[in-house]
Image (cartoon, rainbow, N blue to C red; front, side):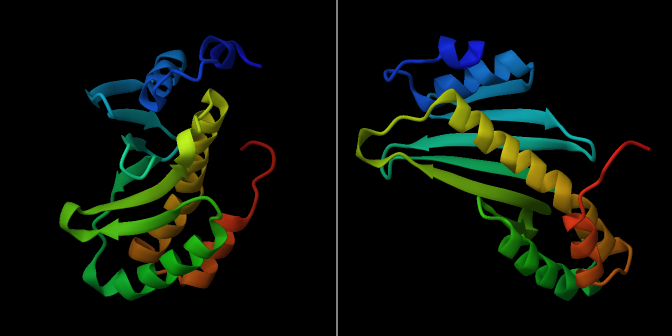
Length: 167
């Protein structure tokens, strides 16, 4: 059990309190928007991602949105939609969506905690980490399809190839 997990080991903690402690631990910029919501800025290799987690007591779920700016040219949209469909097929935890009115892409995931279940610090940390990894993996593919005139197949192949070593 890590020190953060040990510090957060309590069934009485609100999920957003756990997220806030994780944000402090990782030194992420954050804003506690409301009792049930937190917004963070997490630096990736390609860009800074806007990550929001919100607790919904109505359906007992912790919802995550990891968003980044993307306003592709109209002509590239069919290729982008094809790539989104294929990328979502590769993501087992969460999915990508495009928000045209905000000129953004978003990765969404929800952790169901029905029946009084509680989330651990490890689960929430994993949730945030997986969102960032997914965005980092597919961001270059989205760029290649929208501005590089690459095919969705070629962009997906590059996104799914594991990099080894360092340049």
